[in-house]
Image (cartoon, rainbow, N blue to C red; front, side, top):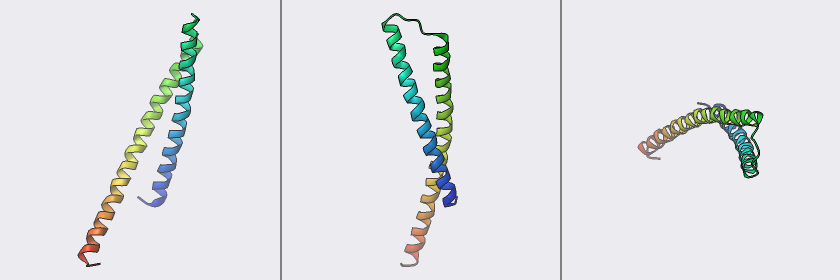
Length: 96
């Protein structure tokens, strides 16, 4: 894999992580709202429940994308490591 591919995947990974953070923050706010409603005996509306469920589903999709990119990055790291190990062995064999 070339440097462009590595950088592209790293940027994409960072965007996925940033988006996940925003969804987790939104979910925390929604959890706080549910706790508030329950403590005052208020009903949680169907619209709120749908929005909450949508956030959960979106987080599942984000996690799947994240796992895919993390696996790719791990493969890239192993590939780069292998190249350095080969280069290092070659360097030692030539006496440099």
